[in-house]
Length: 286
Image (cartoon, rainbow, N blue to C red; front, side):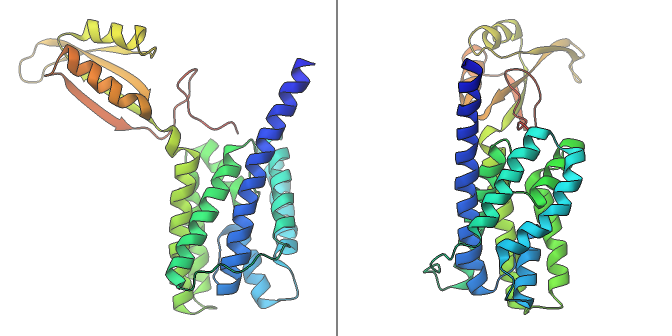
């Protein structure tokens, strides 16, 4: 009974993420991109491209049909849970793309491109924060993230740039430029929503009071710490280097703690792409 309730709770949570993300993406396409005749990226962009050539074919139907071979390939490379939720996301998004939305009140093409990018980026990010996605390029992006640690937004931006080069031969240059702005904003918002808010920081500390600082990291901050033997390049004296990984929210407290023990401590903070490990990992559940 408890397991069933837990499953239902997770299903509802993921359904809400997928549904809200699909609404934002569908609104960006139907209310901004289509009326402005902008392009989009990935399978959605190809659906728009075909829709402009053959207006009788709805974007939602094209998106559904083009996703069929992608899901056939994705079955071999992604987890079954991700596949199932992505299938749900693709179905919901395809259905919402058939819903007519009121056109966006913005009239400036630049503002339209930025607004569409924000909505699409947040929407895609929310769907990827669930156990699934909206299908299409998202599945390819997840495969590259798992196999090659390529960030999702980077994959989207690279694929869409190649698509724009082809579009130069079919659409006005102004449309391509505005679409490129849309791509860039979308990629940045996806990275922010999926991993940016859970960014981890790698920290190295060199201090003669390393024992006290290490104890504080483990006992007060409840984070692991690795002690590395080192040697001063100028003095030749042996020293200890502390290495730890903390969340972005903990970084300020970490620095204050180090300064309280040793105001002259040498401290280096660096970005991480992803972290795997119990308690501190931030790799999405794909």
